[in-house]
Image (cartoon, rainbow, N blue to C red):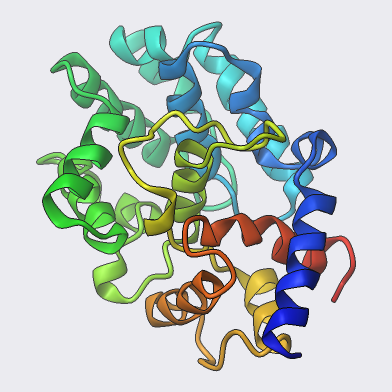
Length: 255
């Protein structure tokens, strides 16, 4: 497709899918259940962590995890103790076991109990690096504690090793983008939307290759860089808004 026509096509699909109906069928519905910014970011981070596989199952298990944490994820994290550890150690979604769940809760507890937060780490990382790849690495390095289980490393992606980091890029989209359609939250204006990277998965990878926006065969970080740079041609200030269009084309229209 010609560039002008492709932009018009993707803008149209963005308008089609950036709606409350998208929220109702997507894991982003999990943080939409909360109003406190801290509860939103913690629930969003955990929901994004579980976001692989069929979306109904992701939503089901993310909802179950939030129920284990009670009315306030923030309070649960700040008061994380032996009793709560026993609650989450029974949790399992696919390869994310109770061991992994406890490790994530302990990591979050360490962060919040020292007066920091998920937001502050990502903002500090971006302020010191100026790009999302190194920001994710910065967060990862501060998230992992001294006796973090070896098996759990795989659940906190590392773009330095080539990972596309789909789930963390999606989480950043949720937190950073301001959406008139009330899909994304816009809670972190300190990070510019222009710096965000596309959450690349099987669906968006297939669609972007079909549209000629991605030539690389692997869904890795180099592919994320290639396709995001091409999306910046259409909207330099907000390239990942097209994630909604691409995902909708891939999942709902089987494009």
